[in-house]
Image 1: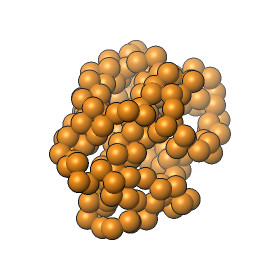
Image 2: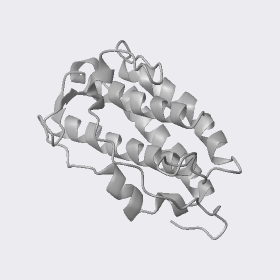
Image 3: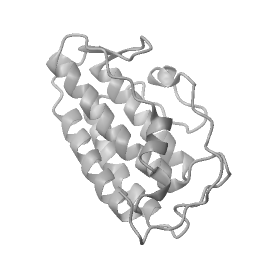
Image 4: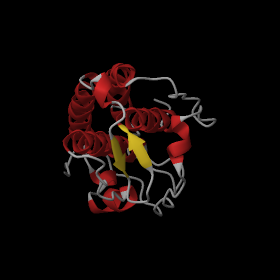
Length: 184
């Protein structure tokens, strides 16, 4: 969505696609952001998700929210739009894991989505509202995970295997890492 009251983004080259395999963060602390998710339950992550939502709202109220810190690094606005979509994608994947045995997740190209959906041109107020709603929805879904479902599996298109528990951990690292990226 575009809003005429949105700040004018800093137009530069697109960031290079992130081709790193971040699945290792499920098992050990991330040296870049310091997040260690290795012992967290889905319920712990639900609490962390709810706790981070006001921090994202604060980020989205910054006057320079649409300004990229470097030409090839997303602005806080773009990161927030991405986080909103991470909440939605991971919620969908969690639902698939509950509904099917060993589903393969549809591919999601976060960089293409950023361009196609015009992250840099979206309204911070709209993103804030959508991010909070999607984050609460995912937190509720993680809160409702039953112990018997922790080991249900799903596969990413590249073959990376997740359980419900590791999907939750992977999700929280992603969100926490992006908070670190934007000094949130």
